[in-house]
Amino acid sequence: MNFNTSYNKIITDDNLMETIQHGGSSFPFQFYYDNLALFDFNCIEWHWHTELEFVYIESGTVTFWIGEKQFTLTEGNGVFINSKILHRFHSPEEAVIPNFVCMPSFIAAQDTFIYDKYVLPVIASSLTFQVFGTDSPWQARALSIIKRIIAVQDRVSSCELATAALMQGLWLEIYENADIGYRKEHISDSASSQARLQLMMQYIHQNYPHDISLEDIAHHAKISKSTVLNLFRQYLHVTPITYLINYRLNEAALLLSKTEKKIITISRETGFNNVDYFCRLFKKHYHFTPTEYRKKKASVLSGEDL
Image (tube, rainbow, N blue to C red; front, side, top):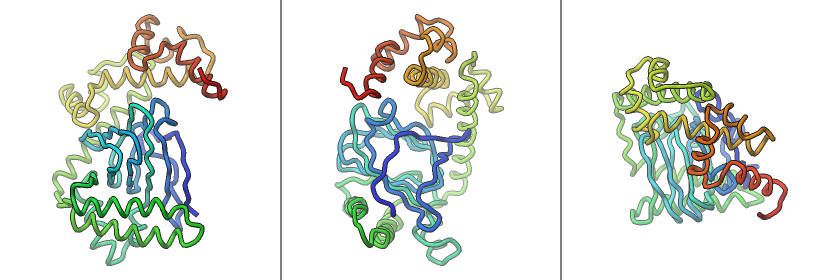
């Protein structure tokens, strides 16, 4: 059965592919009732997966980074994220986002007429995502189906059959109305760019405790420094060095919450050679000093209020 479940930790491999299995081989669909406030820093960090993903904003405001785009959605809107597309979510505060993921084969089995004619053209298209709003009639219909899929997850019986039937109706709306033009050259270029970006992000994740320069990142990816800058700005909307600093701060925050190491030790282990500089950056980024953040996390874990 695939009823409401939630998890608040995204685990990826070195290529940023999510490692958790969503659903099972016999029913490759999983529903999650998530609140971004339960994730570290209200953020679902960069990852991708083979599954298709649908997100509904039940409450709050969420900023999405999907492929090359960044946009913000508010309560009552939704989004579809295509297979194998790098993405990230963040909310400035609490945001409830029921969502579900499924393998493309959940729509129709592979090597069938339905899959080849109606599923493959979408996942092989240049469509990275599709926003659903209430101003467009077809998007409003899609939102209605998404809400019905969410609602049937509470059924004790016939949940799976109802989910499968509704998913086909939702897919029909996307197939008939979304821009799914097959542009092989664009897809090839986009896949190559994303692969290079993932390679550079992986390099940063593996080497962040050490000194890393823009030249080091470019050398590792075997591209020019200008191309590195363009790819980071195009997909992540930050410079490589800003991404590196933010990643170091995130790792420092994890060490503050999960260990009793001294702040000067954490500063050094996460690539900051000057503890005062580290503390200033941490306060600017998270609005807490490292000591305040550690106390806050300890209070949350103990169930106490500050």
